[in-house]
Image (cartoon, rainbow, N blue to C red; front, side):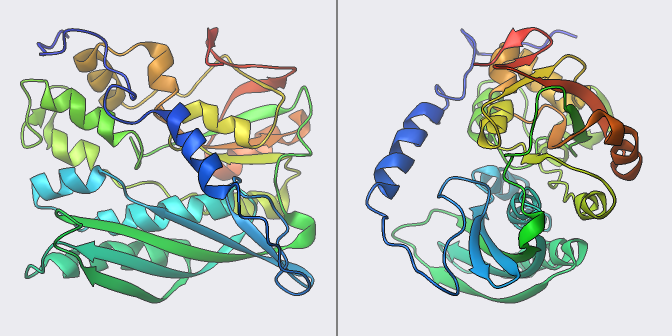
Length: 338
């Protein structure tokens, strides 16, 4: 199917306003002076930059994450539909906790508003409550700020706390060549790459209220607002299987795998992406490489395990064997991502 678009050239994440390379440099600048380390109870056990911060609490570690929904909130505003955005906020935090092996136990949210509107906050709360229920954790507080001079619309973020036995912390150091890569399907775009998504639709003939050309039962807005999957089954895998590494695939797509190992990831049989990705790619004239370096492309979480554990891991998660660990590089179907 061919769609007409105003795009005169291939769309990229950088052209939409998000340059991953510049973001890395900003993070380096932000953290370069953060040198003080607490000692004793609560001492840090991880460097800044992994999926979660880890603190020493005796036989356990406390894991902490923080994240937001990003510019997906602008599409929620356009659709006047806010009841799933809270799930995204919870999911982005919880999935990062799961990527170090931690069980989520508590959450606090931060809602910044331009103005208060009847019914809006209740819809946000419905999503937060559903996300917390899926994650089997408590929302213990939060903060609401009215900032008309700073915020246009709203922003939603949160912080999550988890707990993990010290002998079950996963940072990727156990990953070895020959290990199997198990991909867990995503529910869609999740909550990353939306600056590019919005650019593509802004320069297309479609509105979010239009029905999908490939699915007349759902609007485009429904598709792109599909909430992020929360991968709680990972905890069952850690109880029953030998696992060497875990990764949550978010912003920067499969380049996120570099967080857990300097070895290579050869993905020769990836999960087939949901149709929304094909739709966006064709509308934006986006290359395969750019798609895999921006979006999860249908694989929202990755489990690295020995060959002997692959069938059991797939049975528990419904995941798919997508590739193996090699000596260097990140490739998908022969496409080099780095």
